[in-house]
Length: 458
Image (cartoon, rainbow, N blue to C red; front, side, top):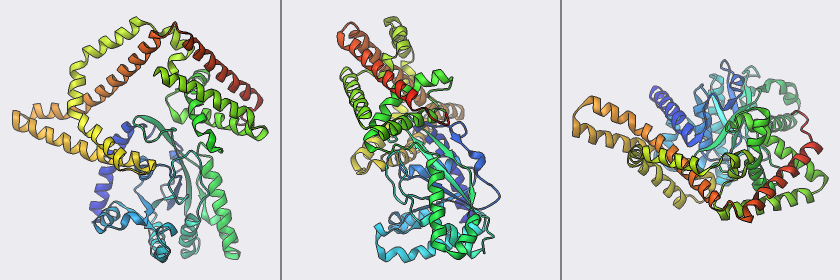
């Protein structure tokens, strides 16, 4: 069973690398910072934030080359069949007070199992916050990570050489949406052994110090928005400023691992300004809210109002885009027919059954992946039985995902062209000029903050 479990894990590793890389704008090697910080010759605990349910495990597990095991909340193990499957793919239950105090004693079994696995130089992922909340913040860490780490080291008389690796999964402001950006940052590892002397004299103090150090190390890998009232404001400023600042610094504005520092600068400016006075940021929030409300009323995206974009916009360019769409219409239809059902049905199911936004992307992706493979194989079976030709079947099986990718890009092209046409239709109206001026005012306000509160490590 161990061999089968390993084979199945590697199959999932490959499949999720491909599929998640398309659901998000994510490439494992391109959008992961710090892969070299993961030791391969010793046991490790990868300590990660947890904003997006089991999507976090899928992304992190398919990013790391090492075979990795996961700790997950115990309530998902209630059904025996599911529990057996989760154990088969390497998921270990952790019991929390939320699932009932009577189950907490079962953590002794979990700690023993983790200790044994770590003694075998294995890698375990743990969500040190102890809960899943979709926000761009780091919650106060629970003591479970410290308990597992010190329990394992103590059993080995602090000769285990266990490394703690802080990890930050950074999603966009809307991680449940299709084709949004994300990236992973892996920090420098530190050893549990360095707390040995303190632990032998004062266990509680050593565990508290360990937890504090881990919290600092994890926070360094994340976008942290201190004030929840600024969540939407940060997302709006990202949309307005990231492209401009990226061009100024000559980096790819679509590569979130590169623009990470730009978002950190935005959060730094808001934090520094609010520490001095709450009023300027409150005014900035109101300006951004009014600006984006008016954009939404015109059904226009912010990028259309960028200075360079306005100059480049023409009806001829839009007509060229429409012509390209018409030329590619047969491919578009083929892509929709062969891929639409596994694309659309999971999103509809997720919207209907998911009560907490944290599970939306996870359910959507899991159902899409399963349904797409079934749908692809069924279509291929029909083609095989119809044509009874290996060459035709092979070409069909290859072209189905390619046609789907092209169809998706054509949809984006069509939506952008429609947005530009709406803008051109109202170009001579006063409200468009008003929007451009409001945008300039927002940019000017942030640039003033940038001069007043420069980022120290910029």
